[in-house]
Length: 424
Image (cartoon, rainbow, N blue to C red; front, side, top):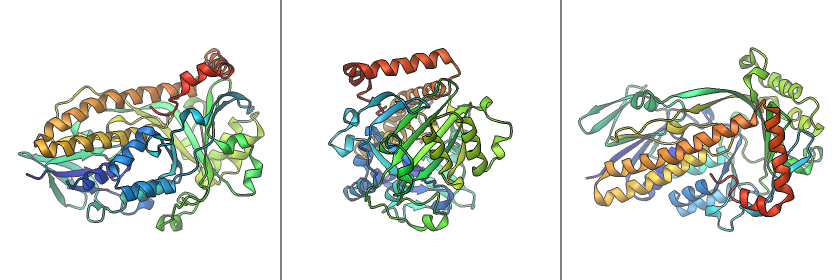
């Protein structure tokens, strides 16, 4: 008997799963509430770590895997921890994290380009304009209901509908997301022949983590295409600042506890947010002021930081969850998308295997047990990094800066401690 699988949500994890299941010949459909891609996509880069790369390699057809690789940016730069005066604390050489195998390496990719790759070839499978409102069970069948009045029957429903998942709210009403009290302000600095001259190589060659003495932090990372074959579609015409995926840039994000920001920050536009960051980094190296002031106001946005709370095991059924829909995390380790891809890889494997055994319920139970373990470990690690990033503890920050300098002075210890940097 064929298992009808409905995936609710056309984001990174849901589409990766759809590609893997489609490649294996399973009966699937994806339902995405956005009518067009311009309703949801932003132009910032996403870091794909070895977990994410392995998942994409396994789930995508060979042609799409090669297309993904063709659209990624250069990843050759070192990862550097620096002071607010742009003095090195520690440099993680790119050789420590480089793998000659693309399926186990790190990649920088435009979110737009990644979505283009993941949605390619899903005609008749990916349905736009389908806003999920709820589900009901009729025997062993799940009936999904949409805002347009339509319904879809499925034998297995997978909620991949993001951090504000409606499926999670119905399926696991006790599963919560909480405000961390941290606010990030992010933007992107366009790189061209002229603007490159205005920034030091440290900020254009590789990612940097800025650690001032207390209370805040700034992360920057270049997305350097260097001839990559990203191709714009209708998104670029919609908004060339946010939706262009053919130009190089440096993405940056400043973060601090919300008590450091003025009241009413939620009402500030991009220009006001940019000015606010400039005020908050007053006294930092001029390179950081250039990075922020040279970013178009339209690219600057406020990002309140939320995180999931732990969820106790639940009885396995014919509804399950994937990615941010179950283990939403802060962006401070850059592992949210990669954890969703890891979910997609594991669930895809299990469902393909279940086609032979006929035991879909056991396949889902195994997925849920393993996903909870690594997924919520990632949530905890991410939140811990977020707290450290904005810590007001001057003594602790001073000790951390000293620790980085120590590792920098003892290369063997640095290699041992940071050889898997960015993998988890």
